Length: 234
Image: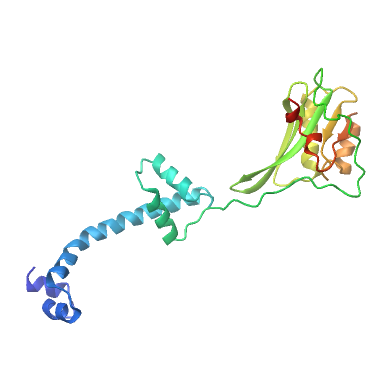
């Protein structure tokens, strides 16, 4: 490299020899660094483009995706990127996914409401459809937060004949599921509706719907999973 080029890369006007002696650096080291700058710049530009793509994937998931899912999304796009590189880029740019939340428990007995008797007695069978139903609520973590699913299952067919989904688990959720079951399940008069003792099922709204549909309400004991878990009965 000639003196003119060295001066161009050193706008202070000092000679490369003087600067190298002052800093204790070999001139060959300086020129090697100078020659590598274009390649380093290209690598940085490529990494910036990858970071932008990672942000795009992360934003599309509404902030839910962490390293594993972002890495998988990049691979689906044909990007042969090492997972550790994705992890480093996300860490350096503070791109984080949603962490798993604490487990939730839904069965909360209403101390003021009298429970219904257990009309099933762990006998989760039925000879014909429309005679015995079981209901339950579960929760589902989504990128929009927790969503709750209420289901009604006919014990004769083991089919879901009613369901409802919402971002809450108030009484209207289980009532909506029961209404769907009544509309689709051809329920017989006196059909048993068996659930746990959760406050949704002891609510006046749900019990009113039970009476209007001419059903009989049945409940298992609090904290005894075998009283409501029909799957264990085969």
